[in-house]
Amino acid sequence: MSMNNFQLLAYLDDLLLPQQVNDFCPNGLQIEGKGDVAKIVCAVTASQALIDQAIELKADAIFVHHGFFWKGETANICGMKKNRIAALLNHNINLFAYHLPLDIHPTLGNNAQLGKLLGASQVEPLMVNSGPQGIVMQGKFEPALTPTALADKLNTLLGRVPLHENVNSLPINTVAWCTGGGQGYIEAAAQQGIDAFITGEVSEQTIHIAREMGIHFYSAGHHATERYGAKAIAEYLSGHTSLNAEFIDIPNPA
Image (cartoon, rainbow, N blue to C red; front, side):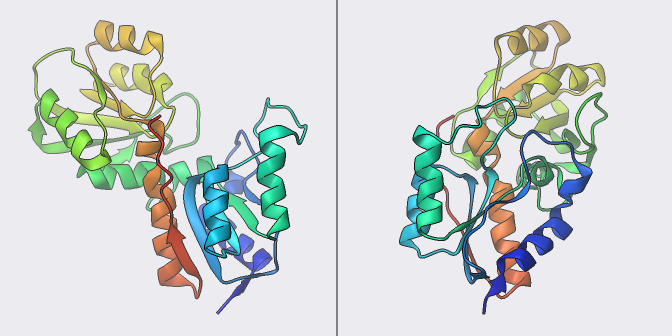
């Protein structure tokens, strides 16, 4: 069975509550396609490779975490952006994108799913000065992990060797994390006595903060840490609607 594309938009808005977040891009239906949606593919980023796979699978809609029309970028529809949008319009494919709302959803979000994958207990939001509640999460490892064991765990779970700034040999009891480009929150985690901080990306100053504030830092990949929200959405739509929903992972080493 199918669902009207604007009914699907209302369903996703009710689920992810984009109106509660001040974001860097429009959340919701970014590109309108056909009115009836039966097949939807879910992924991290609306790249050309994903769009090509969606066309091959005869999908009616795409759901992504990273869509189009970011603040600060040119509004001109040229080059790569023109090619992507033209492919969607030529094949009448809807593009739904939810950025921060997918990061912070309490069960389906990127942060919630990474915490579940890590096996962290006593999970709750970490207090930060910027961003919506849930943009950084914290929890505990029971039993505690050695710094090397946590690096190995991330490698096993995410399929890539994390960059690890190893600041001491003490066991890691508490951990905080922000999927994607969350390295700017490391100082808040350190100030609150967290033993280790996990995110997707690293900046030059991040390493100095980790060393000087004595907090283990793990950069485990933007894409690798954010695969699981879109995957959870695909599973949720398959279980709660009549849609044929499928998660597609387009490899990305970043």
